[in-house]
Length: 391
Ligand SMILES: *[C@@H]1O[C@H](CO)[C@@H](O)[C@H](O)[C@H]1NC(C)=O
Ligand SMILES: *[C@@H]1O[C@H](CO)[C@@H](O)[C@H](O)[C@H]1NC(C)=O
Ligand SMILES: *[C@@H]1O[C@H](CO)[C@@H](O)[C@H](O)[C@H]1NC(C)=O
Image (cartoon, rainbow, N blue to C red; front, top):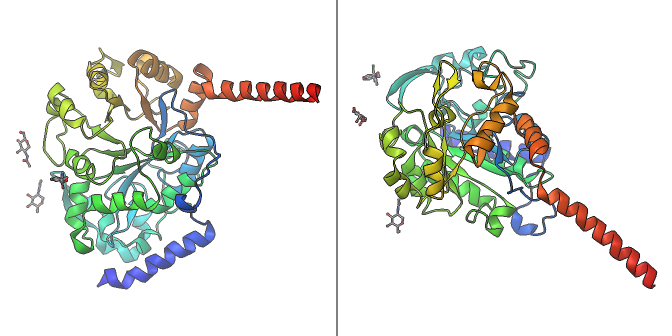
């Protein structure tokens, strides 16, 4: 009942959203793209939940800031509202990063569900319609980060997030995660028996996202699809050839869908299997180089073995603060980036501080295309002078 009642309101919300800032015209209407292309010559700067080191995570403001700061990709977690609208939000509960507790009318909505084998209590996203979620405001997750933007920004939808990327002044990729698919498919039902994964891919297609890694279509609208659930990645490989990244959790956490151990999913035989479906893996960095007493220990061979299987490696998550930086780096995030890029040789980095990674890369590895365009300009001027002389 709730679903049918709230449907026109969603449409209305989308319309008012587009009145405020129109959605980018569908790519079929605009094939000429003169924007600066995606750089592909140095490891990808993946803005984890936007510039969430500065602005509350997964909000429009956090993504726009990340684009200003030089992100190659803006990253997000996709979940679903009760009425089946895909939204950008990390936790399955609203408790930690919104002001939900201030809403008396929602007090009785607090409940307990089993999520990946653990009973969790809180206000679950899947119990709220989009209209209700839009009443909330997002807060900074960590108390040691800037709190001045708390309560200012709304939760955004998958479509609004896509519009932000497509509206960027240069080509900026998207990097959405199919988040908690087992849980979402248990709690949210779509017409015609469609699965969460179907709606996810349908949304990408609606906005013109298609094509295999580095294809012409992909370079025009780059996207990586990420998930911790291998069955979701295998399933959608029938629906889209967009590149996929298999996320790998801590060594103690089994996969949420197939209940496989870390050892199993990082074995050579498993990498052989999964490389048919994905272009890379996204491991937690502390499993690639295990940590003891906040010091790095010996690096594992995971990156070398992934590369030997022709898989990229995009570890997560790089964070500037002392509380996250291991002692080896002497509280200097540039030293951490240098270690992972120069010594470990990763292909992309999920960072909470896109600006820092961008500054580091600009300082150490200037893009070759910058030199090219400068040279091009010199050639152009030279030829103009030539023709002037001849004239
Ligand atoms: C979660 O709680 C329910 C109801 O109390 C119980 O039946 C179930 O076994 C619990 N699950 C876990 C994983 O603890
Ligand atoms: C993909 O499609 C093929 C052909 O229709 C089908 O046989 C296969 O089961 C599908 N795979 C998945 C994972 O759905
Ligand atoms: C997952 O695997 C572990 C270890 O093999 C096993 O103990 C556990 O019962 C399994 N859980 C489920 C839900 O199948």
